[in-house]
Length: 431
Image (cartoon, rainbow, N blue to C red; front, side, top):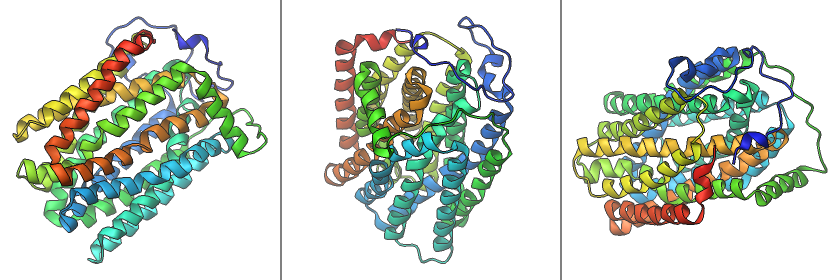
């Protein structure tokens, strides 16, 4: 099924867009890899995001290890992740409505500023030695509130910077910058943490938000079509939910995101405990583990961007659903740091192939006037269930240990992937 036949044409192309290009054949091309960089607004976005996300991953990595140092509890690691995700359930769907109602650039500047302030508060608490585990839980919750409004706007903002024909490339490059930051940020955080403490990781993150805020402010965006307001936010939300309910393929794709988020990502929360308890390492080991996962995701994102407008997206999605649980099962038996890093590279590749294809296929199917709301449902299935999975993983690890927790998660996810293979064969045919 070719979703391009269902897509509503854009009414206002991105400013600075190149002339329309015909669908290109499948081939590896560096020109195609960075096709979205032809758009001036996207170049600003790419640079700002790179600087900001390096800081974000420095804070995330340092925060996890600080929590484990303060509590020595894998369950508390899950609690912090759960606190960060609870706002997704409360606000993400409304965030999608807001994203469809107000200028997305304005909304993004507001959310990024809020995140900068929260990072600064955490840095000051760490510098003064006053930071407590409950402080981190509260700040994680508030950061989750900002993310609940930021994520739908950020994902739907892509089509204000590039034309629809380059959507897949832009999403892949977004993933590239995210995962490049995942490679660099945790490694730098581990070294910084060991050398001068976690407070500097949080401060660097606070300063890094200035880059993306400045990039958003400098963009010259084409006027967007007027967004008529319906009977109210609740009515508009019901319209988005009704669309997902009526479209079986979109519904299935969102379901895949939900299950993988619940069972496939809890191991990330356990990495600080894994680095110390299983591998006998420290904050540097934790940083390298996070970076290894990011390296695999970076390779996947660059590969997808380089393939261009390829037509077998459903097959790549299916490959990711099968590869991720197999690698998790393998990871549960690993006790060597080099082997663990290698497996994490593979897990990062599978994760990125899976979620990049989910994002691309959903965005290709959704009408522009529903984009924010449908992406908020997709975001809720991701951000909303990751913390639940993290809380379950942390609690289970406290009872039965990290290896068995990861093994059971991998088996459950593999059973789901096999069920998807036999019960939803149409997914493999998606283009």
